[in-house]
Length: 300
Ligand code: GLN
Image 1 (cartoon, rainbow, N blue to C red):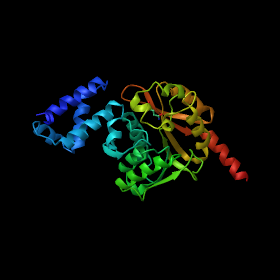
Image 2 (image 1 turned 90 degrees about the horizontal axis):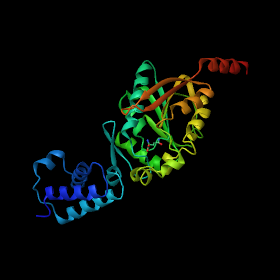
Image 3 (image 1 turned 90 degrees about the vertical axis):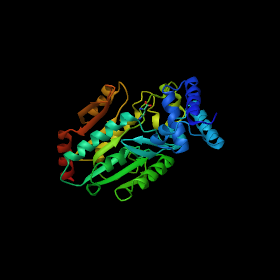
Image 4 (image 1 turned 120 degrees about the vertical axis):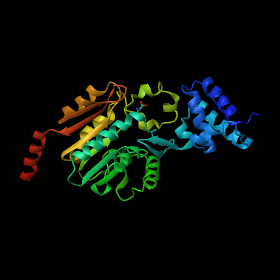
């Protein structure tokens, strides 16, 4: 009696509700489905199906992990992003729905550069979900792509995803502290850098503060440290008319804009996410600067 799927769903709902999980019923169902490797249809069709006590134990163990704050993605090692399932673990930032905007806008930019081969760089590649989603949406022979990260452990997750999506030919990975190991120039640079103020990290949900890597969240005292580094170094790595697309945090638009504009960039794009928060900002180098740079190089 106890081991009927439906009963277990109710037990799961109760356990998760008591521990403060918002969407307890849904999450309980997902945990049960994923533990049993059932499809939605199987799950709905046979609510009175009996499960073994071993399966029950596994389900309870996963429910308890969830009560500790571990997100479902990090219990099962997968997260859906931009309609694909990515390998994730504790060494990478969990792919977030708002980051899909960065992907969408980058794809749009690709279509603008229709006629030639495009070089793409992602700084802080993490699981690879951003750059891989971009590559999966465009013609692969039109792009050469590089993803860099300071974390070896993150790079190994990105590598798994590259293999999963068979992108070994078009996407390379490299260990690099922002641009420290990057050579050459790019048409499009994308990044979702760490932008949370150090003092704010403690206040984030436990799903984030306990299960996302600190290094992927920590933007320093004002949350802007990485933007300053990127603005300083990207200049030498942008093709003529090259662009940078960045994810930013709530309320950061003016500060980030100021950082880049002070360093000779112009803002060409600001885009709100579904919650109405400006989430992605795009920069180009100002033309005047480029002309100056040309004159300089031709003098040497
Ligand atoms: N959006 C994430 C959060 O608020 C932070 C991601 C980042 O720092 N890039 O938890």
